[in-house]
Image (cartoon, rainbow, N blue to C red):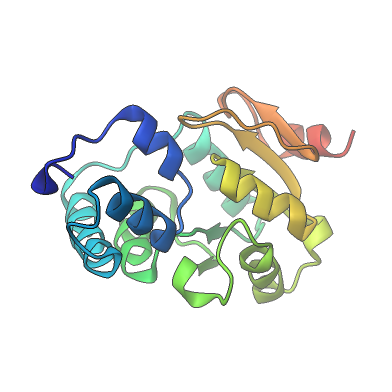
Length: 190
């Protein structure tokens, strides 16, 4: 944003957490008073964030790596469902897979007709692994993603990142640290 004379604040970041790219680019265009089109801003974001994903270390949320590894050991399908575009998802997934192994499936925001907060991304993910959505556990970190998962009918754990999440139907946790697959499943089925 500094390229266009606007400083990016924590409040701006909070507003944009959870995407999708079109909403973020529109928000940025509005805040620079139309000095650049959202289409160009979106392309710039894809390029800049993609470069960061490839050069910076992956920052896992506490407890997340252990949960993914445990799911692999238990042969539970693991799926990444994101509002990010495939281009970004592929660069970060390859880095994530280096430490936790391959994910079963991934659904990117540009591969669905309706991105988060619409339920379509989660419904697509469940269909892709052949499991009824009601039997899926979604772990989310944004309001947008939590809303998507709840509206799809998944069991949902929300661990807020940068913004509070208060969505009926989601179990809210401060961290995944100290949790395992069984404890999370018990929380969402009480």
